[in-house]
Image 1 (cartoon, rainbow, N blue to C red):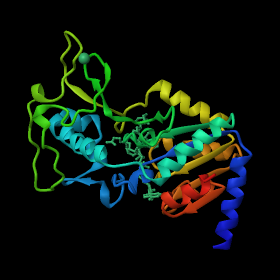
Image 2 (cartoon, helix red, strand yellow; image 1 turned 135 degrees about the vertical axis):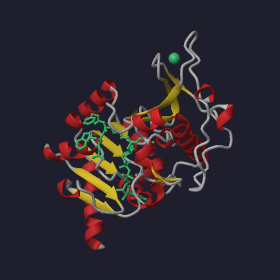
Image 3 (cartoon, protein in one colour; image 1 turned 90 degrees about the horizontal axis):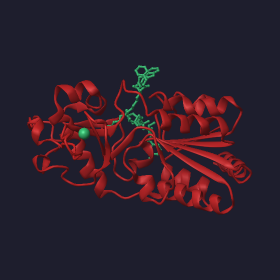
Image 4 (cartoon, rainbow, N blue to C red; image 1 turned 180 degrees about the vertical axis):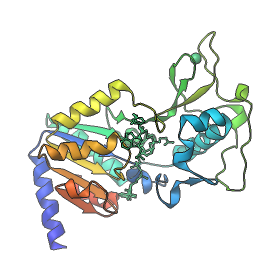
Length: 271
Ligand code: BJW
Ligand code: ZN
């Protein structure tokens, strides 16, 4: 315990002496708000494992099923609140900016909880639950309606005995752009899809330029995000991992704080 205290003290010193801090987050930061992570017991919806629905193939085969899955998660996330870790990150960013320093937040999460906690300029690598993208004209729009369309009202129950509602595509969310009207999809990066080029460039620039890095609540197995923290560490920049367990990246990190991030991150970033 004394050792852990000294390590925490050392990392806090690093933070007070650096001016360009990168914070990378994954679904573990939202776990204590009640948002299930992907891999692990919470990662099931009906009889499906979440990653098997988050693919372009799954959407092409059954857009109704995939929209029901996202309707469920839009409902769930709209009811939860940011936790102490999201708050600590947002307050730390505000404080550092007031000191003329820079704190950038790059998240794999699509839940918007960093922004709800007051964080600024959050880079969303994998898109957002509350944005849609047109499958035809590719227009991206913010949409926070619940239900997102009348046919999805009350749909999306995670009960494993429930089958797809097979909603006809005409009744699924449709593009509002004049003369388009095509099927919308969630503006989310699915497996096998490329990340947005500008978003990826922003992340790479920060990976190359930061002088300290925190990586919070990610299993560090989904690329390209999985390589960001190891790339920072390779430049001999101090990186601290916050997770309830070890990950494939742990060995490469200078610091590893094991435990729930509402405790560990709050302690690391406290004034
Ligand atoms: C706590 C906690 C608490 C819990 N406190 N901690 C190179 C090598 C191998 C494969 C590939 C590769 N390049 C590309 C691929 C394919 C693929 C990939 O990486 N697959 C891997 C599984 C191997 N990548 C892609 O397809 C990406 N596209 C791409 O690279 O395009 C180019 C290309 C295409 C094809 C081939 C080659 C190149 C796109 C990835 C998009 C990911 N999208 C998802 C789904 C979003 C949709 C949705 O949400 O519905 O994004 S996948 C899913 O995983 C989601 C997450 O953002 C992402 C990361 O997960 P995360 O956040 O780390 O969550 P978990 O559950 O995995 O971990 C939670 C962690 O928290 C755990 O460690 C817990 O211990 C911890 N924790 N409570 C602290 N209280
Ligand atoms: Zn359109």
